[in-house]
Image 1 (tube, helix red, strand yellow):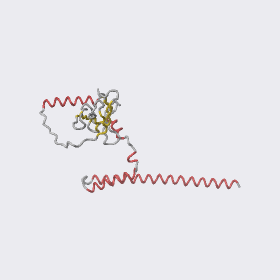
Image 2 (tube, rainbow, N blue to C red):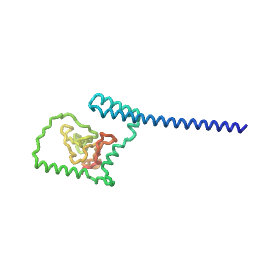
Image 3 (cartoon, rainbow, N blue to C red):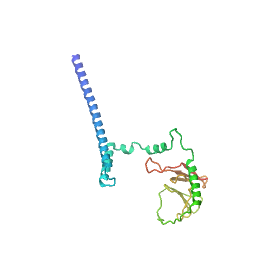
Image 4 (cartoon, helix red, strand yellow):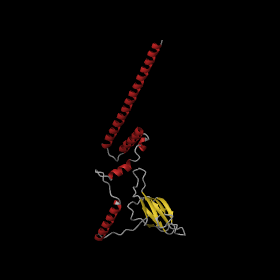
Length: 224
């Protein structure tokens, strides 16, 4: 009695294993065919795009089809697969084939060279007069603001802007002065005054979230 039961159990096991392996092979084949079909479709669309006017409505329609095909193929991975790829690319640009990188303070050194060159050129070439035509009532994007504790009136402010450095107003915003022309990065997103000494200001530069529109900073700065 035990032998027929054992044979039956083995038969069921072999059959189940065969079905399982067949399904795996079938799923792999379907995935492979889907990838092959997706790549061929993109290749065909790109070929069509190259053969027509890039400014035409047809080109715009094909571009939208390509975007939708990629979104459907990659799903959410299209947005989250490589969030640090842009930052890595910037680091690779600054690294030589032998592993060497730019020296510390290279930005400040190059900024001084550029200003010296500009001064020398100004001596040779007559500069053209420029007059501001506005708009005068549109501000940039400020990310951080501090009030000077040394001013009892509270009218002296320092504002760190995303793309325009640090600005100071002595009269609650009526007049402004740009105070960070020496910064090698005008992207300033954080500012703080030392509690122990109101004459010491710390500024953090850069706005980076791994996106293409990021503004690379130059570290943390301290006033003298």
